Length: 375
Image (cartoon, rainbow, N blue to C red; front, side):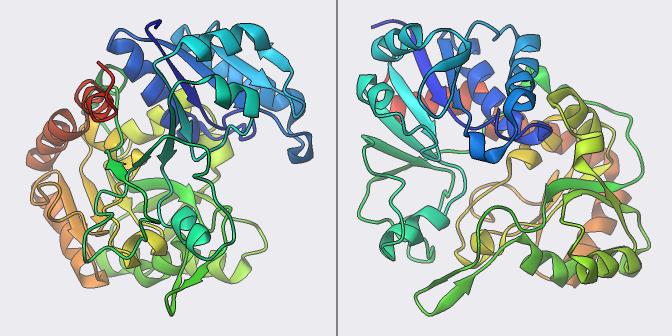
């Protein structure tokens, strides 16, 4: 068995999403730090319409990290259109320790069959599990092991169904050497995210599980309540006129993600010039008490930026008094803002310490591999 781990996910189909690209870079660079060779497997669907732009974006994401010879980009017919050849990719997957298929994105039957262990990595928990239970879709079929960042799955107070599968839990990794402490930042609490995202709300078990928009509206008055500056690089459609007006009239500074976080370097710079993060989760993560914690937030923490996070059931998972503070209500969020600003240096130091203790890719990925039975 070669010392290779294959990772599959969607980067080429989302050009201009620097933060999304970092999700996969953390795994690729993190596994490489542990001594593994890596292969990234991506695909392009012509119906998405990004074509050459997506192809170039993928190369631009990987090449600065010396990963330009460590990927394959497939078209909808399975032919390699960038990176290594299909035959070379098949051989590397066949010899790899495992294939980590993020959200089941890779559907190529031949490549999946070549992998000795097919691991489903769930980074958007709740949706796939409920779809399966409702008979709408089954993303998990054809995999040998199942990993989720919903750390509370299977616990009595977590409403995400297990679907009868044995779930391995993990946290989001951050490659600390790529995210050094940045002491100087602007005055604003910031974040990056989508208003709705690709999914619709789900009716399950007599409840509706919704999107980030449904949570964000609960806290929209925070800038006017605290008198502090808040900015969000928000992927929101121009037709959302009432919500855009709601955000602006309540003091939110809105930035276009494509303009300021459109590639990994710009995304990192945006995080590091922030004062702290204000993180609002998807309603799905909150209502299910999933234990989900954001891949963005771990980057803020690593950069020495405190995080004020909406509680998704993480209070028993991590320390939440210094560096990372949680809230459930608007008033609790306002108190958290003033606590961070009133004791900023202490919270900034604690933020980096939390990243080192809980989210360091060396620890997180080594632990994950042990759980998967990979030496």
